[in-house]
Length: 190
Picture 1 (cartoon, rainbow, N blue to C red):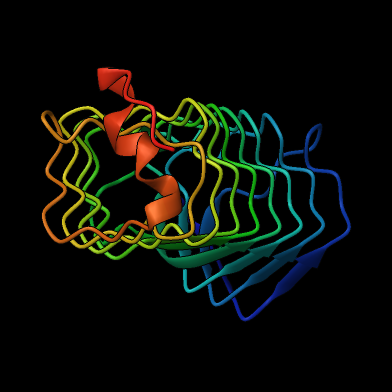
Picture 2 (cartoon, one colour):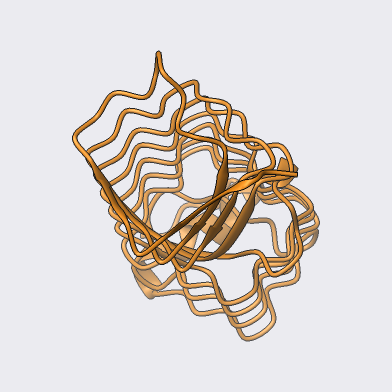
């Protein structure tokens, strides 16, 4: 288990891609314009933290705890988010690039994805009940046996969700994005 403890600290404008972020537990800390790409963040704990304009692409996050963490304008490409510690897992994403990341088999109800690019993200067998996908690009995103009850896709684009293999009860869609629900049927809506 990690030994260092950081509380109410600001970390900014530093490249940790070569020198690792100190292993430990971070509470109510702010991370701004950091390059954490490829870093090993495994077994670390982040509680009530904000990551802004950071690059965490391809970081190792096995058994990492994210509890009430907010990501804004971050690049989080290729992350195996399903490897995180599921206990109290809670995060939100605003204007983030999450392409090629996998959320498979996670229970992340009420998660907010606003203005995000989730190109080819994997949501297989994920519980996204009441998730908010405001203005998200979901090109090639995988939804298989996914729980999407009450999820909001009204302003999302480029998704393909098969209602026969996903639970979409009470999910919100707009007339403009209905084709994403009918794609497999090769129906043309004029």
